[in-house]
Length: 244
Ligand code: 4FL
Image 1 (cartoon, rainbow, N blue to C red):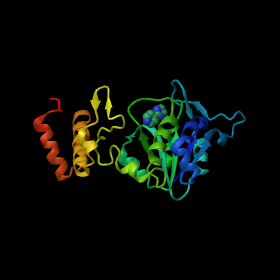
Image 2: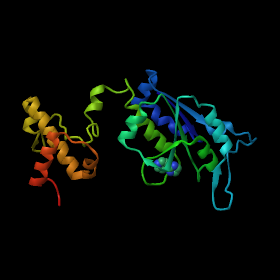
Image 3: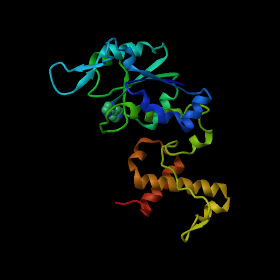
């Protein structure tokens, strides 16, 4: 998977070169290419922004510099994304969908924004990472790259993906390591038993409990198995953990 990031602040992307993503780039499974939009300024002072027609505070990034930076990386198979508070909020389903792409171009806005004509011209998919305003699209772009990279074949061990939160639409069950007793609290007996089927059932029930308690909204958007639906009904009836 290749990412081309169009940004005025390529230095902000240093952190993403570390750790797991860094290993992916070393293994040549991932490539993160940073394009400085300023390099496409034709101005002798490398200016990329200007005042807003119609008046008002702040500056906008000019459409021509953004378009030229875009054209420098655009290919036939490119999927183009604009990190924007106006986009749909990123979720795991979108992450998995985007992980299937070969080439992502990610446009990061800054200052007050970008001239609308170039947004309309390249018609990117707009993606938000949540309902809050940031100083720019760089942190959202890093969130997107990190979340997608985990799903690219060879970046992570297969099991760490299939067992994590959201892989079945549910939150994760609690996990324990040594010591077997900590501050008077012992690791649940079933997990020490080595009985695989009982462990599987216990973990599923705990996942459902946690999801019901902390993020009941997640249960509305997933297809539960018969087993999951049965356990969930029991949990709701007993209301041993479900407030209300
Ligand atoms: C982008 C916020 C995506 C949340 C300012 C410029 C943003 C953002 N998700 N804020 N871009």
